[in-house]
Length: 458
Ligand SMILES: Cc1ncc(COP(=O)(O)O)c(C=O)c1O
Image 1 (cartoon, rainbow, N blue to C red):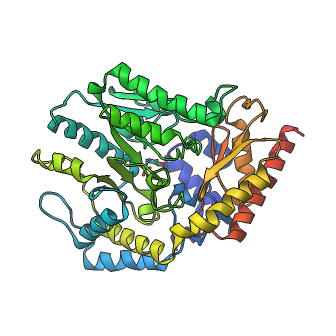
Image 2 (cartoon, rainbow, N blue to C red; image 1 turned 90 degrees about the vertical axis):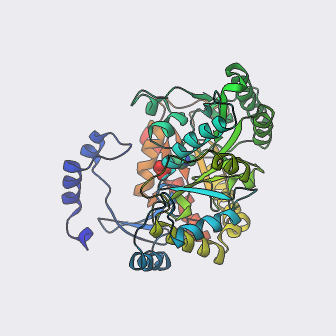
Image 3 (spheres, rainbow, N blue to C red; image 1 turned 45 degrees about the horizontal axis):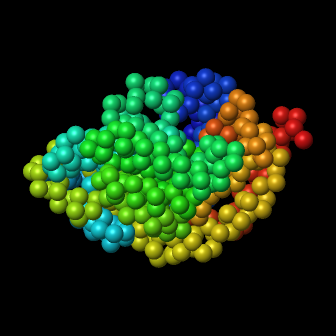
């Protein structure tokens, strides 16, 4: 195998010379070197030094079925032999693509019975922007073009998806957001709650900012509100119970479409097939990716309601699509992935067993640590927010330094988490067992201890 040809140092030198990474300061690669991952099985990765590391992030929140699943490899192989590629443009389609669309229509809640495929979450969200604007045009409301999203939302990295996203650092690259993209506050009690506010009050205030924004822009100009049922890359922000019902009411009252970005929350992560089911949401559109194929092949989709699709299909040609929309190999992998998730009862297992166990262990073992401000999560997605002072929710300065240190210690302790500002995020494969959860939590605790020691904190 090529991955065994070179030493770690040789891989690092070659990588540094020719490979530009997403989301890292290239200088860090000089300083610390690239982590070269050469193999994986179950919930574990193997690096180029032969170390086994528990993947507490399922790659990038996507390897829901875990690594080394021969069934998925076989599905890809069989489809490549049968028909490696054909497109879905014009009047063409392939059997796996048609079958996957039909399976998704049964799996998705409500009347989300129509799938438009692409390869990534970003492309799916770009598709949302174009199709929603088209929809309002066809409905005779061409001024309804503005999208409202939230600070700390992550919807991808293309121009439109990053405009939907709520990260100043991303907006600073490429002159974003594009016109027509607005942001309101998320229901993020720990960082944004007023001193005397309960999480529910922060949730109500966050929803209110959405209504105020719609009114200020004029509902006749607002196309849609987009949100992740649980915000992922923004730091695993779990909304209080009153938030989504109020947002849903606001969207309905002002004739604003509701789009759920389920790129992380889809396919079992929160203990239901979709986050929309966990929070009793009835979105007009849903974006899915990642767990749709457990990351084994790139595929994403926008799911649309019957009503949305009927309007869209009354407007003639839909001038939008990608070479790999509905790629047959990715579709075949996704079909097998969904079959296995069902056969192994993984969604139910997350809801009734591993999810509650994970949440309980995280809180029991980490909440009292002096560096920890809050532990939160739902199902198999969780976060540990670090803070200088827990009671007053005072952050560390500069923001991000402590979690970055801790993230390094986690790796040394044999577990990969994600550091975002001063939040450590976890989103392991849905196949994780109790023993592995115990290992993840214990390694994180040791990493927190080492971080406190390095900072000279008690
Ligand atoms: C909620 C959400 N939406 C969209 C995306 C973008 O997906 P992709 O990286 O496949 O373009 C991500 C990626 O992390 C995500 O978390």
